[in-house]
Structures are given as C-alpha cells and as structure tokens.
Image (cartoon, rainbow, N blue to C red):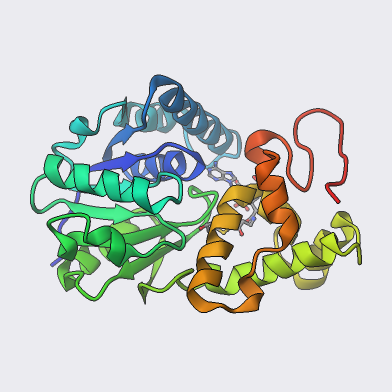
Length: 293
Ligand code: 3HC
C-alpha cells in the first residue's frame, strides 16, 4: 500500500522547479519551494503566477482554485524549511557537484524516511544517491516542460532504490494527474534518449544551411503532426539544458548521434539560451529576429 504524501518540497525554482511546485500544489499538496536567494524565489513565484494565470485564462483552473494553489506554496530561501517534507524534488541546474551538495544537505535536514527525488534529465541518479546516507530512498522523478501541461513522469530507479519508494512515487505521479513510466538509471532515460538525437540532427541541418529554421520546424509540425518544430522546442527546453543533456549522453554512450552540434555550445556561451533569455533559434523579446547561423 503506497504512502499518501501530503507535505512535499521542491529545491530550485527555475522553469522546471516552479512548474513542479505548481503541479504539486494543484493536486492539493502542501509545498515548500526553496531557491538560493530572494531574487530566485521571486522569479519562481512569478513563474507560478504567470502559469496559473494562463491556466485560468484557458479555463483549466477556477479563480478560487488559483488562489488556493498560490496559498499552498510556501516560498523560502532556506533548505532547513524542508525539515517536515515527506518527499523533496530537486530541480537545480544540471551540475553533479551542486546536486550532490544539495542531496547531502537534505539528508541531514529531512527525516530518515523522506524520499529524495531528482528531476535530473540525464545525470546518474545512483551517483547522487551515494551522496546521502539513504541511497535506497533516492529516486528520479523526471517531469517534462511545461510541467503543468505534459502528462509524463519518468520514474528512475537505481539498483538500490526500495520497491516501496518506487510505488510511493508512482502513486504520487497518479495523484498529480500524470502517467508514469519506470526505467533504470541510464543517461537520457527513455524520452530524452530518443528525442535528443532528433533535436541534435535538426540543429545540424540548420547549421549546415540546408533549410531555414522556419522550414525545418514547419516540416515536423505539418508533416509529422508534432505540436512544435525541433528548433522551437530547443528554445523551450533551453539551449544550456539541451547542451548538458546531449553532452552527458554522448560521454556515456559515445554515440555520434548525441555529439552536440557545435552551434549549440556557441549559443550557450553567447547567452542565447532560448525563451528564458528572450533569444535562441528565434527571438521572443522585441522585434529583432536575426538568424544565429
Ligand atoms: N496550465 C494548464 N494548462 C495549460 C497551461 C498551463 N500553464 N498552458 C497551456 N495549457 C494547455 C492549454 O489550455 C491547451 O489545452 P487544450 O489543448 O486542452 O486546449 C494546451 O495546454 C496547449 O496550449 P496552447 O495551445 O495554448 O499552446 P501553448 O503555446 O500554451 O503551449 C505546448 C503549447 C504545450 C508547449 C505545446 O506546443 C507542446 O506540447 N509542445 C511540445 C513540448 C514538449 O515536447 N515538451 C517536452 C520537452 S523535453 C523535456 O521537457 C525533458 C527535459 O528533460 C528537457
């Protein structure tokens, strides 16, 4: 019988973390949402306000439910506020050392039976688990962007994750209105392992000037029925995140399919990170819509 979790935490309030906090609060859970400083917390709060505003405008959320969602999220700059959480989802940037530090701190702060989950897209959950004294309670809980809309959660079990922890997280995913799939600890899990070869290939087509960005995207939207073309999707995911995912998968498999196309690194270095910075393959703020290659 799965545990019914009611108090949860989210660490890292970027696009994914804020989205995950929103999803949890929309399911009636009490959420403590933590980031490093006030500015980061305010960005996270703004993200939730904007997303729930959009849900309200689209008729997906009633006005009083929106207020209740915002009330169920307590924002904080201190990990100590997670001392009562039954499950914490970490969603900080994809750097192993940073994630290991957070897991090690959470291990000291949270009760011994708290489940520590990571939203990592490609780093090893096993390597994170051994930064704690409770590897059997560490698991991957991988959401998709935008978290309030995408139905999938990948549940990533390591060789030491307790089966009851997997069950608890699967039950939680169902309460969040998501469909879960379960996979072992392998870079890219299921969806990213299949998706990113395609995205990388689309960037290479563009970099080699075989086609315009608009035509590459139109081909996949209108020819294959995808909701977004690959270059627009790269901008939604974030060019930095996409680079990290490709690089990690390439280092693990040495499959050339995942060797990041050079322009991705160049865009990352230049700060063209996609929607979150207003410019990636496309421009989102202002009128300038210059091509990147
Ligand atoms: N809350 C609730 N519902 C929302 C919402 C929100 N904040 N924002 C949008 N929606 C709903 C809309 O009401 C609409 O529902 P309907 O079809 O029932 O009317 C639906 O979502 C689509 O919304 P729109 O038509 O208004 O289109 P948007 O421009 O808002 O969003 C999109 C479009 C959902 C982003 C769509 O283009 C899409 O699905 N794109 C592909 C996204 C994708 O592939 N994500 C995965 C990336 S990989 C990843 O995340 C892994 C990571 O590790 C990198």
